[in-house]
Amino acid sequence: MLILALWQLFTMLVQLFAVFAVLFFMLLGVSLFLYYLLSLISMIQSMIGGAPFVPLEYSVAERMLELVEPKKGEVVYDLGCGDSRQLMLASMRYGTKGVGVEIAWWPFLKSMVMRRMFGLQDEVKVYWKNIHDVSVQPADIVFLYLFESVLGKIKGKLQKELRPGTRIVSARYKFPDWEPKLVEQGEKHPIYVYVV
Ligand SMILES: C[S@@+](CC[C@H](N)C(=O)[O-])C[C@H]1O[C@@H](n2cnc3c(N)ncnc32)[C@H](O)[C@@H]1O
Image (cartoon, rainbow, N blue to C red; front, side, top):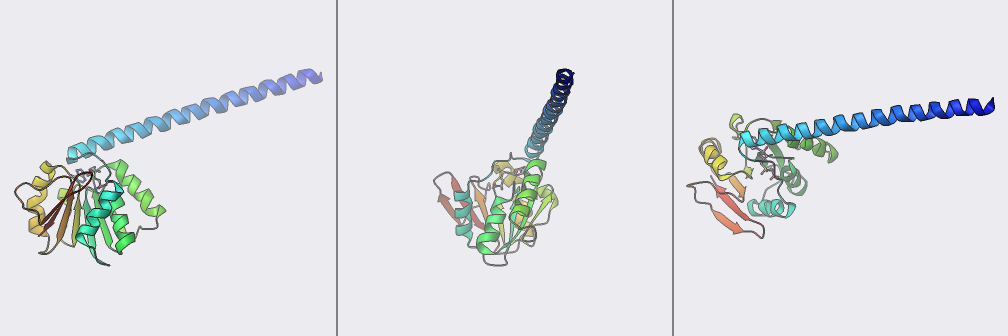
């Protein structure tokens, strides 16, 4: 009798375990599917915008900041800000106010999590928008890491909206037909500085 009861308990436990295992793998499968779907949609959004999400190395981000010498309280824009790492770095190091514009879901969500983690939600704002739909007029400094073709498309907008004296710093790619004030051939790739 006792053996029968123990056997029933054992089979019940095995069944319970099997149900949990199936649920666990279903949940894992759905999560992985959603993750890859979100990444794929995000990649398409970035490509439609004009440049993929390739985060800048911290050493290059730091050098870009040194070149434009941000002052406390200055407003820094990053057009196509990815996970907003450069704006967060600027805010932590120099006390600047950051405004990021990002078209793709995945880096936008990542930036939300990272800003919350570092407690920078007030210092750095990120908008899920297309660069072309945002006014850059308040910027003192503009960061860019976009293809030359995209830079060509936003050049007129920047020259029209930005105040004289605004610094623009671009990683790797330069504006067509606009002479930079400074070019640094960095270890990884060049950095171009422009002054409006
Ligand atoms: C090369 S990544 C640079 C990311 C970030 N600035 C950094 O330095 O780490 C370019 C980013 O620009 C975004 N992007 C491309 N075209 C855009 C557009 N038209 N409007 C807003 N964001 C755009 C992409 O989704 C991508 O995250």
